[in-house]
Image (tube, rainbow, N blue to C red; front, top):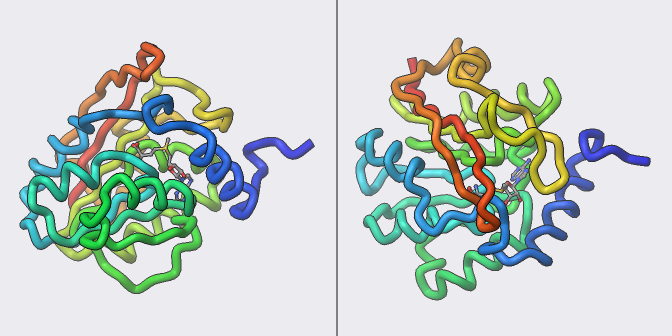
Length: 212
Ligand SMILES: C[S@@+](CC[C@H](N)C(=O)[O-])C[C@H]1O[C@@H](n2cnc3c(N)ncnc32)[C@H](O)[C@@H]1O
């Protein structure tokens, strides 16, 4: 039997396609009508409205809706699932044309594009092996501009140990910083409690990094 942690990129993709196909966003554990921690850290990074922003593993999150409402003009949403992107585009209607959409596994995303702000909530913690972590951090280092920022929100050390049936890796600010310490330093971090649609509390750690 193939364990979820052994799934390769193709199998991971079909796993997530199935979730996004069969689960309404508002029934998903990660659903937030207002992604407050993310918006707070994006505002704190003081990027311009023209800054190039990427939401990695953005899925069908409403973050993009809020960023558009605040006037950000250069937003990219990347997700492994075509279905997640399709759902988000449908929800946004004509506004979807203002967004760049990329369907890719972030660990094999092949592009020279650079970004001023890299945001990831609840995607990074699904990378459970060293090789995936290495590929992800290499991509972040390569893609984030010289004075760019990175915001990562993951399950904390007191958060859940699984999500959607998949194993995850828990973090605190120092273990997150260690992974990128050669290139990035933490400017701000906090833990926050997310209440799922079925009223379960989940503890997250959020970090805002700046390039050294
Ligand atoms: C728990 S959901 C979080 C969605 C969104 N970031 C939010 O906060 O609502 C995780 C998302 O990451 C996507 N994902 C998982 N592994 C990925 C990978 N390796 N590359 C890109 N996206 C991935 C999934 O399709 C899913 O949309």
